[in-house]
Length: 422
Image 1 (cartoon, helix red, strand yellow):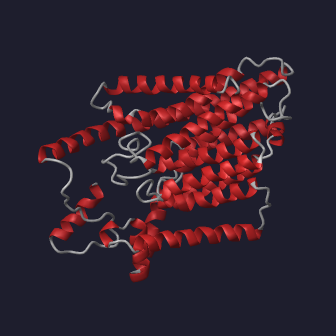
Image 2 (tube, rainbow, N blue to C red):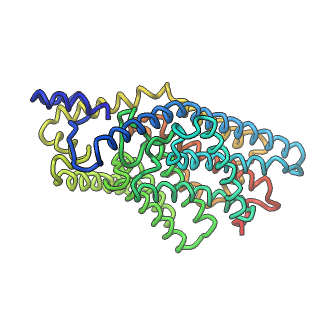
């Protein structure tokens, strides 16, 4: 990890690491095999990381292009249906397939990691694999749902949740050197959950749970939804799994709010205060548990808590540096384009005749809870993580796919907006 080089050199000279410097000193271990094995591992990781880094921009561009196509195509289908009094529905299936394919594309970028395309096949093979898997997954979603679009989007969202939860609890192997994971060349994270994964996983969990309770309006479904949210937050935060404290702080308020509203409770000032108290208590508890570990085993949470106790000025500096990093990417992230695209699409569907989004919103009882939780998640994800606006940008890509599939279902349904699809 490049940020650890400077602290290591300072330690060799007997100097303390300045508060403004990130990273910590490297240590040697007994595991890892022979010297030749370690060298080969580093060389391969470097090669895979450089390949991954070259494909990040293209992958983001793919998301932006698909997001634009989905928004424009949805507007055109909506316009044609309005002018033909709803008799034309041919465009709904391609729309839904492309939206499902976008979620399949997100899954495929992680599945490509273990194949090491940087060393096996190169760019052409990589993109052939990613595109092929995206198409196959879109087909699988539709076939598994028996061409029921609401079920299809539920399966697609579940695939994102299951993929990342299972990966994180088994070592986060799909994060390493994948375009929306991390690499040894960026010097931010080498274990656990990356920020883009947090964005996809948390957004998919919120949308899945909201749609699940709509389609299965029972207390059992509500309990299942809350259990999914609880498992997701635990997996993201536990040091041996996700090790992503920022994700827990960002997601917990939205998850708690969604669970509360799905239980049928109203949101009041007291509710907001209670959720804030739960978040603070969770942060303190996790920080204290981490602080009690040996100093060399502490994560950044425990180290920050120690700094708060022993060096308040240094802790303030850390917060200022994180805020600066967050804001510095605000105008430089292509993924931000998805927020603008989705906002324009929602405005069009809500305000331009035939106002197609309005009956859809009225037809889904859980839409208010889901959208409220999603927006809280997106805002806190932006504010509390150093990837900044890229996090809500990725969340809105997942949201747009979900919205387009739901709109496609509405366009195809003979009597939409009344009963859950069965």
